[in-house]
Length: 366
Image (cartoon, rainbow, N blue to C red; front, side):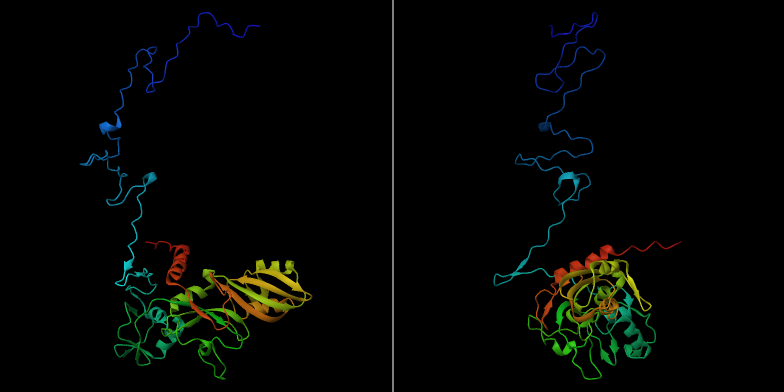
């Protein structure tokens, strides 16, 4: 049986030719009226493509790398036309040969005009609301003149006094992790003479320097133990405490009673107890021995005794409550009363993450 199909009569066979530009190829002579393409210049001819500068030939014969259109001088081009980020400054070498670490930028006020309450809060004098009360009581003065309004705008704290004492210059923000033990109050002092966290804090940090004036971020009641954040920056304290910022807190509770995972999962929708509304709580049953169990709870509001009230609402008795995490900071295996400082670079990264999440303010209406 023949394998080739006969061609229709009258249909000429066009000879195959190689494509232009390929090795051994030639122009197509069977298409009259179309001029052949001009021969492209070789790279050695240094003919630039439209919109791109020609490569520069150095004196030694080497070819300089072509810069991307719009690239800034002094930056090496990258693929995709993007310019490389400027290099980080080199680390400084001391006279003894050791290498000095780069200093992380501080989160402190840097000269822009701000309300005096915010500046004093950042200086660790008190919270914004407390500063406003202090101003109303006539305890704050500027250059000897008593201040009568918290709306005063300043660029620094020069000449500002509180109760007649000058306010110290602003220091870089610092954040400490403290393992609060059971039996101490989260307060500066107690009228009944009970021990506070300040009675259990060490006198110096890890480097031997005296601790700055520290304020607790949130509170843990007397019978609750675990992670307590301390800072010298009132604005950082406010940033961590505000429920709108959604900073998570994780607790582990040892409880006695009957509870199911389904009951705990109902807390994901929030709960109302005695007229108080509590937001979403992620609760999980960890392990159970008889009627005793450990429950882990993660929340973002941190209202007064929230964990205990929610668990007691389910008929559970809480015998131990430990806070294990606050935001990205964890308690780990630190023993009670242990104090450690968050590295400045980690703190800077954490603060910047909030700046990226912060919603942009709508433009003002004309």
